[in-house]
Amino acid sequence: MRLKDKVAIVTGGGSGFGEGIVRKFVAEGAKVIVADRDAQAAERVAASLGSAARAVTADVTVDADVARMVKSAEQFGALDILVNNAGIGHVPQALEAVDEKLFDHVLAVNVKSIYLTARHVVPLFKARKKGAILNIASTAGVSPRPNLTWYNSSKGWVITATRSMAVELAPSGIRVNALNPVAGETPLLKTFMGADTPEVRARFLSTIPLGRFSTPEDIANASAFLCSDEASMITGVAVEVDGGRCI
Image: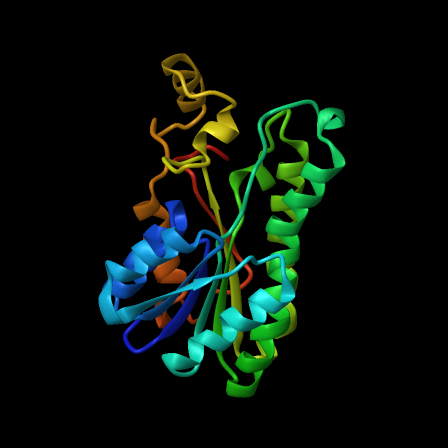
């Protein structure tokens, strides 16, 4: 129960890593706002967890949605934890082939969303002199693969933003950390690999020393620790949960 009586928001909480984080947080005693653009997905996850979770439909690239999402946490009490998990990728392709619309969308979801949530959450945390923010980045921001240049760059931004936020917000008692997952068994896996065939999987897995993809449980376990009081002296780190991919 390392998150007992904590109140958290998890964006992109309706599937994949986000769903895993939501379920782990509830198991550890937290009350959680399950935020997702997909209303049905958010409702499915929240309904399965009873009174400890509430679904909120929100597009994290829209300021009004983010404001409403943060406000909704008040039903559980004062907010303690924000997990910026919502993110998207794109099919592997030459950097010059990515059209402007897709580029803007990747940057809006992976980058602008963190700016927007910070604008609404940081003042609350400053007022309480405490709070934990966790940004889900990627190994792509540390060890980029070809043909994912703009996705790689967006996750590199997340890592730098995490470190800068940590330095600026530390005097206010706010910790900011990141996780760098390797590709996992989530709905985004096919997007990152370009195709999901035994051959493509084998080639990708050959780059991960531990020989398997990450799971929502892997990311959830690391998230619970970094957002708990056990990690009270840890801020500004970007922890690889990658089976050795970035060694």
